[in-house]
Length: 471
Ligand code: CO
Image 1 (cartoon, rainbow, N blue to C red):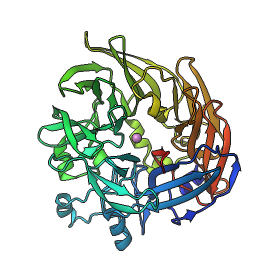
Image 2: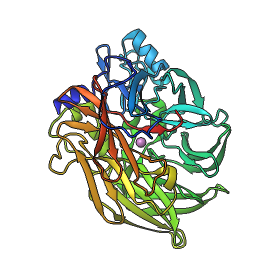
Image 3: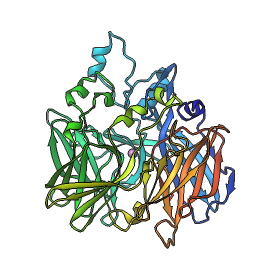
Image 4: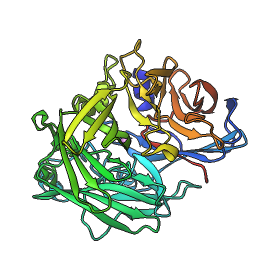
């Protein structure tokens, strides 16, 4: 674990551009696009260290494929948070769980002049005719997908004041639209769902006023509805204004509130359901669809929000750490009688869940979920294996190598795919024995290795990435 801690949560020594990296095995010839991932590039600024896995300064990684060969590049996003940290040698902007060091004298001033990070480190996306690095603050960062150079900021809407958003906008490819959720904090706060057209123009679909807004990392969508699962991990917004504590430490777990599903009609913006169920927490919605007058939502759910505090770096340093397990749950929302039922579809630990969303999004025919997991024989430490869950057969395949730490697995369908899992799964694996990382290509069906491409530098444990076939 200490090797993982030093290599996976340390700092990146070099920005690289490597034309042809060593390939072992075989990368399919049809893979001709680019796999771009986002995540922290360093947890150290001068003598200071960030506190949490969700802190750190954004770094993009790009693996580009051509006829079985692979190139690699990585680059920090050149944001204000990055530039000021490099100029001063100090953490200068507040992150998810780290505030800049403040002297007692400077504390009050700092509270009213807080600088919220612009280091969009969590995901990447292509919409509004831009390639964007996505973070949870209102400002997103446009980058050049060829050079990974930082180009400037992008806001979903300038007229409508908003404070936080999700890094999981949902594409409706049939209508060439993207949906996104934002929160505006105030005496009364608002959950707001927006529609972003392909020309970049955005409009408000609908708003929901709330007194104690929840921490929301993603949301759900079906052909007719947008769904917010409001977990009872909530904040009194004035606490955020005064910035007494780092952002996430202002949120409190309030299990008595239960979890509430808000169901919004996508056309009218009307809230057509407010359904309550047992308290649970999640970062990630997976798929959602409508079937037999029910809204079916697959969610990577936890019993509570303890997972967030498990990701403090001082916890990750502890080799006895046991992560709380998220598991795949299916929630059934019945709008007629306003009832919610749920069942667990697999007992495997699941995080960073993915599925073939290009082809199956909002479609009940989907059957496979890929994700990060913890090997049941090696449960101490960090996520150490990949899983593929077959929902209908209640069957699981895994990929595990001791002392190797994979990240989010991204499914890429084969061009002439004959079944849902006909394709490859891409991920970056940190090899703590060789102090290096590699791009791993798994066969989507057998979940066994086809090939790997090695980068002779450890890549920090990151978050989300996407495969762009056009690059
Ligand atoms: Co996420």
